[in-house]
Structures are given as C-alpha cells and as structure tokens.
Image 1: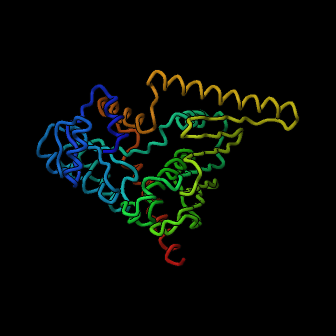
Image 2 (image 1 turned 90 degrees about the vertical axis):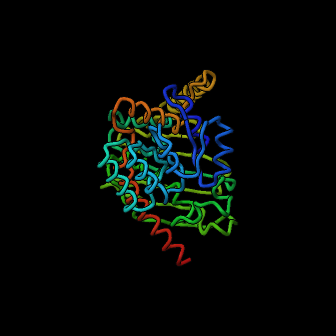
Length: 337
C-alpha cells in the first residue's frame, strides 16, 4: 500500500488498517511499524488465513493484480485495485468473472477522474452546458526525477511498453469518460530525449478516435516541472484544466472584438483567483482531497451502502482493452528503432 493509500484510509473514520503485506517481509514490518499497523505478512494468503478483513487494497505491479484479486474475492473479501487493473484482457476478464461470481465489490482506482477540477469539468459536460465534447487533449508531464523513471530496477521498465504502460490508463479512462464512448488508439509516435539507457522511449504522443471525435494524449519524462493539463474543446466553449494545481477555466463562446477579448481576460483571471482561494481554504481547514483520497472515500461509502464502486471492474476491463493494444504498438515501434 502506498503512502497515499494509507493517508486516504486513515481519513475514513469507519475504516481501520489492520494488516500490510509485501513479498519483502522486512519492508512489510518497517511499513507496519511506521504506520502503527498491528499485523504484517509476506503473502495475501496469510492475511486471508488470519481473517477479519473486509477489503484488500492491491498496490502491487499490475501484472500481479489478477491472481491477488481473484484469491481475495474467492475468500469472500472485497478488493480495491490500483490502475491499470491488469496488463492483459485475459487477466482483466478473470477479475470481472470473479467479481460477477462472488457479487463482491471490485473497485479500480482511476483517480484523476476524482481530482477537483476534473469532477467540476465532468459535471459541466454532463449537464450539457457546453454542448458536445468535440476534442480532448491530455498532457501528462513528468520531470527526469520521476521516481519510477529514474530507478533502473523499477518494475515498470519490465512491463510491455515500459514506463508508459504504468500511466497510460489515465488518459484512456479520461477520454472514455469525456466522450462517453469506447476509444480506439489510431496512432502512436515515440521519441527518446533523455539519457536513461533503460528507457527505450521517454516521449509519447497518441491519437485516439471515439466515433467522429478525436483525442490526444502526450506523455513526457523530460519536463521542467510535473504538470497534468486537460483541454476539452466543446461545441459551445472550452474547458482548460490544470490538475496538479487544481484549477479550471471555462471559456465560453465569444465575439472577436476588443471589448470581448478584454472581458474574457478578466473572466479567466477571476476564475483562477476563485480556484486559488478555494484551494487555499481547503488546505487551511485540512479538507483538501486528492483524486486518490476522494476515490477511496467514495469506494468506502459505496461499500457500506452496498452500492457498486465508483469505477467497476467492467470499466477497468474496457480500459485494459485499449491499454494492451497500445502496449503492443509501443513494443513494435521500439523494436524497429
């Protein structure tokens, strides 16, 4: 379980973390002591045998998600699974089948959907205020100091598609949500700018199609700063999101005269001031919720209310279908370079 998960669960008064597990038992012990968790184990089987668990939170490398999730559900335990839910459609299907057979909750953490500006944008789009989403662009910019990229021994580099495989679920599920449709990746371009020899590529640009609509995702591990930008071009306006700084700018349709341009600048500035004040207030009152925090909060609330999780295993499977195909394309391109 990552630090973000510990913090999120600790904010839920009805939840209690009673055990941690890691194949490195020494690390499990250190983590348990740090977070004051009463028990630690080396395997999931040991946790299952000990009993008293309602939810298993799976934060292991994605290729191990399916066997762990299936084992937990067969033991009658609900599961929360980090993205991507799996690396192959076959593994993702096993999770879906186990969930359907047991009737338990199997939630997938598509956390960017639950960051404050994205929630606001989803509400605006959902109400039809700006009309149809015509195009969506997502930029995920990371510095060379990215904790996974910089570590030559990190498991992400052994995935099909390397470091990109771990993070591409984000733009896929965002595009699916904004377009309210399946999305197909129609083109991928790769580039190598950095000097980490264990990364075959560190820049990616992908184009997607959802019916007649197009989307784009750009990922970099050479940026001067971490940033997540989302631009939604709609029939009656534009939404510009900065996820890390948690801001949203709504740009409605406008005329092209000078007065309109001037008032539009004032409107944009006022929106940034509003979001900045809102964020400052949340931080000051300790009511700030990251996308991870919000998703886990909703997952727990839905579980207690006997409702489906915010993101189901079926939706996780749909994302994996696109992800697996993209990873195959990335490997094929890299093999030719």
